[in-house]
Each structure stands twice: as structure tokens, then as C-alpha cells.
Length: 110
Length: 119
Image (tube, rainbow over all chains, first blue to last red; front, top):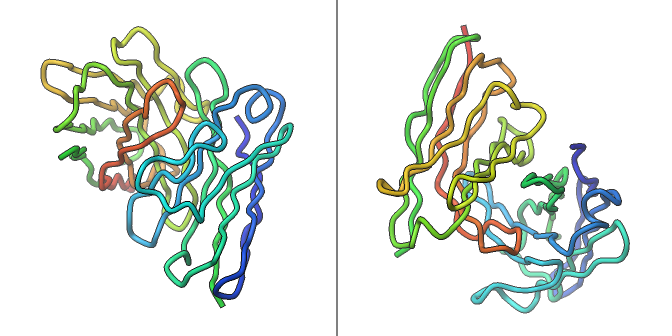
């Protein structure tokens, strides 16, 4: 149950697009179409952005999109806005009713 | 309105036990799996334990297996995490989360309860 690997930090200017990667193994990310993504502002509970690799819950902005290739999942934020400055985490099902989170990425809007 | 409210956190000495609870409202509690996710101070999220809607399936992170037990009472709309043999590195905010469905995601989160393991 090793944590999925994410870049520690990313930054972008308003209006730009950034992509956060999430690398796992053939036992988690690569085995199931069950990667989810969460956004967490300081002192708050995380919020679900993407589930089942690329699906968006109702109410989540279409500026957030997810994809996956092999053992690596990605979250793209389009049209970066000041309110996007926060931490982002990926999570994958890992079998036998277990899950593993990513190491987290701090996004800064310049 | 869907709501998860955790309780039971506090300061506990290493080696002692603590049980945290999560009360759900606004959902058909007995149809969803539930989980506990924790976050140590200044650190990332760590999935801790999960339980199916009928208690027949449970899963644990390696870091807590054999020490923590997840359970639920569907008549009380409550999920529990019994934590034994607590260690300093169990210090964290413990969040209760609801399964989205079979989709392997957590769509509802509580506000968290803080557990501080310290002598």
C-alpha cells in the first residue's frame, strides 16, 4: 500500500491550464477504472472532483477533467482561477476493499 | 441535507484506546459503504478503513491492521472506528466519508475529529 506519486507543487497563471499526474502500479491505478480526485482548501474537508477516472459529479465545474493511461492518471484544470489555489489528491481502489491516496499536489495561482 | 458528523476525538496516551463515531443524516445509510480517512498535521490524506453497507466486507490500511476495527450500526445511522494500541503517528484529523456507490469514490465528507496521541 504505497502512496501514489504526485508532483509536490505546480503553479500557473490565471486562465492557463495545468495537469497533475498521479502514478501508481498495476495493482491499483492500472487494475481498476476507479481513480478519484479531491480538492482540499486549508482547514476544510476534501471535495470530490472526479470519480471512475473521468466522471464529474453534478455541481463540479467542467474546468476539471480526468484521464488515465496505464498506471498514470491525470487531472487537468483548465482556465485556472484564483479559487483553484489549494491541495489536490488522487485516490485509487487497490483491491480487497482498500484504497490508496496520492502524495498530494499544492497548486499555486500566480 | 446530507451530513456526516464525527465525534469522540481527544487526547490519549500512547498504548491506550479510543473510539470515534460518525453519525449520518439525510441519506439511506444502510445502502452505502463508509470509510475513515485521516490526515496528520501538515501531511496528506491517508485512507484508514472501510466497511460495506451490510458489514460483510471490511478493509484496512496496513498501518492500522490488527489495531483498528471499523463497525457500523445501521439502526443508529452510525459508523465507528475503534482504535487500540495507539501510537504517536496515529495523531491526525479523522474524517468519515460515504461511498459514492460502487464507483470507488468518497462523495460526502464529515468535518473531521482530531485525535492526539501524546503522553
